[in-house]
Amino acid sequence: MTTLYGYYRSSAAYRVRIVLNLKDLAYDQVSVDLVAGEQRGAAHLARQPQGLVPSLETNDGVRLTQSLAICEYLDECHPTPPLLPADPVGRARVRALAQLIACEMHPLNNLRVLKYLVDELGADEGPKLAWYRHWIAEGFTALEAQFSREAGSGDFCHGDSPTLADICLVPQVFNAERFDCDLGGYPRIQHIAANCRALPAFAQAAPAAQPDAR
Ligand SMILES: N[C@@H](CCC(=O)N[C@@H](CS)C(=O)NCC(=O)O)C(=O)O
Image 1 (cartoon, protein in one colour):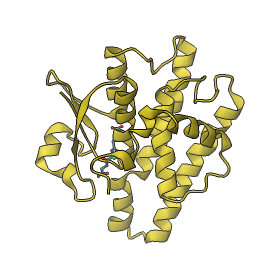
Image 2 (tube, protein in one colour):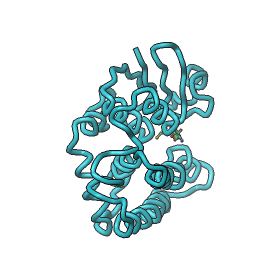
Image 3 (tube, rainbow, N blue to C red):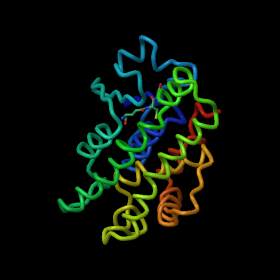
Image 4 (cartoon, rainbow, N blue to C red):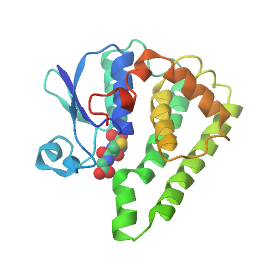
């Protein structure tokens, strides 16, 4: 059985759950408690040397890390439904949207970064929240402009079915809501997120639906 090592509130693990569900793949979940610091324990470091979730172990014993690499691996092994468009320009656009979220936004607001701000640099709750909301606003403003201006946009990030970009967007919207970010200025993002969340694959991957949810 394929095993996902993740955490209910991890947005990178949330991406992989969405893909496993879209592809209708059965999987077990092992919870790595990020609040308790289990990601830095020896057992998890053996799976993911950075001390991050997710990690995926396939039923033939292959261990994979990095959520986007895992999502593309699953897409290559199980091509239906596809996570990337058929044309190279479309694929580049979807990857650019996914990378804007996964490479530019998400790492700045990760747990270890917030902990460093608080524990090592002495930031209080106010500056920590300002940091968090600043990087959400930077990223979402750019995304909203792309969704408003670019021809590829539809009811989903690209066209009218979910792609790798939506798989990154929905967990990032969850994060933003969790930290009470004002999303009023991003109607296209909200429209796309609502369309995604209406699909069972996304709903069943939501943090609140996970066995380790608190
Ligand atoms: N680029 C990595 C990011 C993984 C990542 O940042 N995971 C977070 C949870 S969403 C984590 O494990 N954080 C633990 C920590 O910061 O200590 C991926 O996409 O897999």
